[in-house]
Length: 166
Image: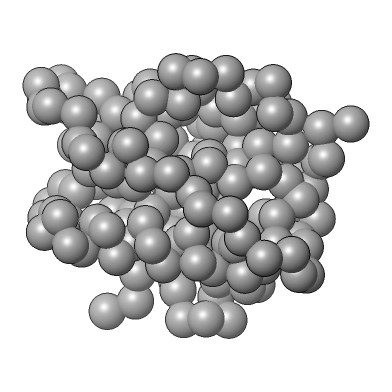
């Protein structure tokens, strides 16, 4: 079964580019342009991974991350950002990895593979048998050691579009 990935980014060029790369390597990809539609997608179906922009038009990516950690804490989240100042130490608790825009295609693919492999190695069950678990009371669970995962240094190469933070 193909791994399902939700891309939540308000920048259409980033969403389309990331979607094309991931779908081209065999992942099933769904897109959302704002926090509310992204959370609605999470209520409708299970995702194995979320790629989350911090700068959304309706709510912040931090707000979305908080909801995800409360409601579906086992879904790994890769933060996408073009503004390094948004990534103050401790501000990304609950995120599994961080990618800066514009991102290298190899860096994106390797990070996705590492995060999904780590989730599988942790023997994580499907996050929820019912996507409606997002509407249930959040379960009290200990923070996963996966949250401590760090991205490694990557080789330069082809970059996907995105904000540069300049």
